[in-house]
Image (spheres, rainbow, N blue to C red):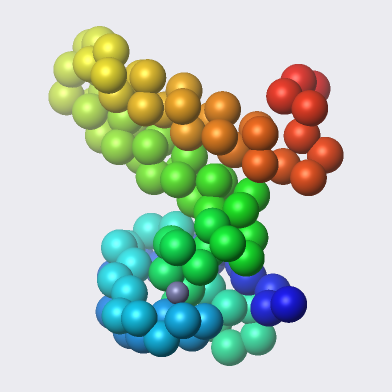
Length: 102
Ligand SMILES: [Zn+2]
């Protein structure tokens, strides 16, 4: 099974997914890539091969989004907070030893 990892890239990456070959566009920031080659992996393959990493990536994206909103307004919209909470819940549930609590 292919090992995946999360990396930070200051620039977006546009390339074929190294697992399924479909064109994938990874936005700048946290990106899911193949560990050996550093080649991009699309979100569908990420969810299939490394669900906990894909969920963590989603959580990071939501956190960045809510953080950006929070910089412009005192209270981020309720829906944005709900999205963040949902991403956090998804991540907690996807961890191999995740029991939902610490
Ligand atoms: Zn793929």
